Structures are given as structure tokens and as C-alpha cells.
Amino acid sequence: MYLIGIAGGSGSGKTTFANKVLSHIGEEHSLILSMDCYYLNTLPDKLKTPSGRWNFDHPDAFDWELLTQHLSDFKQGRPVKIPDYNFKSNSRVESTEPVLPKKIILFEGIFSLFDLEIREMLDIKSFLHVDSDMRFSRRLHRDVKERGRSLESVIDQYYETVRPMYQKYLDPQRQHADFVVGEETDVAAKILAARINELIHE
Image 1: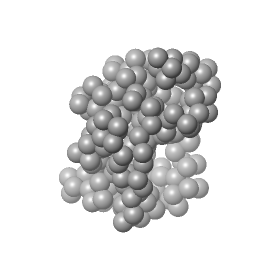
Image 2 (image 1 turned 180 degrees about the vertical axis):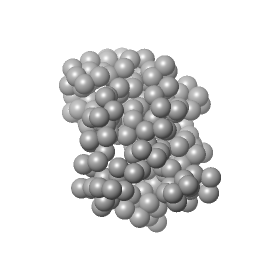
Image 3 (image 1 turned 135 degrees about the horizontal axis):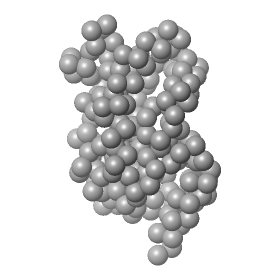
């Protein structure tokens, strides 16, 4: 089994890029695992900002123990029960989704290259480097349309936590990437898919 890491800031297009790669390699041998599923059900108090908002862009917002265990299980060929996180209520739902391992796991998330133990499990590491204005625009559209947020709350959250956390924690992950993807994601997806197909048929 091969584990492919896809990191990048919020709104950088990680899910879209992962789906582009998947379209080239097919779902028979591969699946997408989103780090968003592994937000903690209850965030620690230290992640509450002075304005009373929660900082969801800090590494401590994630259930690293469960995530690491599940990635290890996949590596060992064992099925896992992936959590189901609801972004409108900011909490996990009771149900879980059992997922069987496949030969290729596309693991995408803002911190997919952050943890050393997880990085050592990754066979290919990529980072999406997208202009901050583009990331902000995409996040604004997504959170208002899909997650029921107000325009004002998305803007306030971006300047209070999203941007400073990107500069402090997310962007430095680029140094761990095997390759960095810019705006030309179609070309990059084909190149990555070609390498993955080589792995599949080795």
C-alpha cells in the first residue's frame, strides 16, 4: 500500500487536486482520506481566541493519535472506521464510515506533512502553494455556501486565526515536500498520477 500526502493551506485546492489525481488512476486501486475527518470532537480551551472563536487551524485541533493509528492500519492492510465530522455543528456525529484499504491512499489535509511519524509513513509528499488571495477567495465561497457561515465571520476568522496559523505552521511544511504544486494543478495531477500508476504496476 502506498500513502500519498497532499498538504496546503485552507482553500489551496487540496480536495480538488486529490480528485484530479484520482480521475487519472481510478477508484479501483485508490481512495481519498481527508484530514478534516479527524478534528477533535471538543477542542482544548487553549485554542479559544480572545474574541471567543475556536482556532481550527492549529495542530492541536486534530486527533493525532486516532489519525496516526488509522494511517498505520491502512499501511498494514487493515480496514478502519473513519470519523464523520460535521462542520456546521463543529462536532463529530455518532456514525463512522468503515473503509477498506486500497493500494493507493491520497491523504489530504492542512497538516498532512506536519507530523514526523506520519511523514515517515508517506511514500510521496506534495504541497499546494497557492496565492493567499486565491486561498481566501476559495475559503470564503466554500464556508458561506457549504458550511452556513456568515460573510463577516469567515473574514474575521481568516485574519484572526487562518492567516497567522498558515504563516506559523502550514507554509513551513513545504520544506518536507517531494514536490510543490502551483496554479497548474492539471499538469501536476497528471505527473503525480503517472508516478502512482508506476507504483501500482510495480
